Length: 161
Image (cartoon, rainbow, N blue to C red; front, side):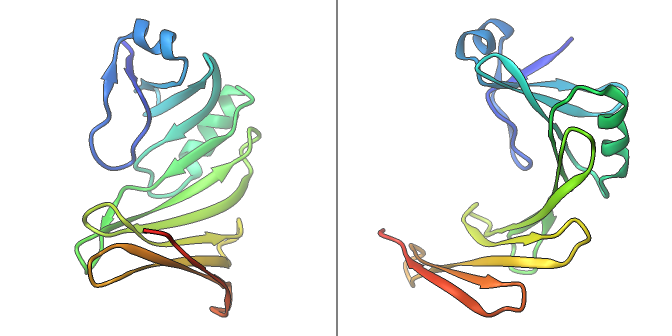
């Protein structure tokens, strides 16, 4: 039996919906557990991409993606890890439909789910760029600070609260 959800979340509960509701709204994910745990994403009712969750590395997911020849891209998520500050982070491998990794992301969040840092890497793992999210003393996001792979600031953006 398939399970349908409004969207995929790598951490936290996902809202389960019926197959009829999924078909009505047209944007949803379907959980599959065999032979590998994954989620098929649908956009406007069409199979759009696939998500593999809780992977320690992308190899098994990529092998599965290649073997199915579904011609859709994939995002492979590592399991969320707790940070020393009490938040969490994970890694994402973004793969083309042929299984080749286009880029890697690392996302870090505070315990309240607010973003802390978003990093982008080349397929070989070299840091390409990252963005730090800056909050004021009232925990309101006030600024984004963009850096290149060497840590140099490339741009800052003020955020309207």
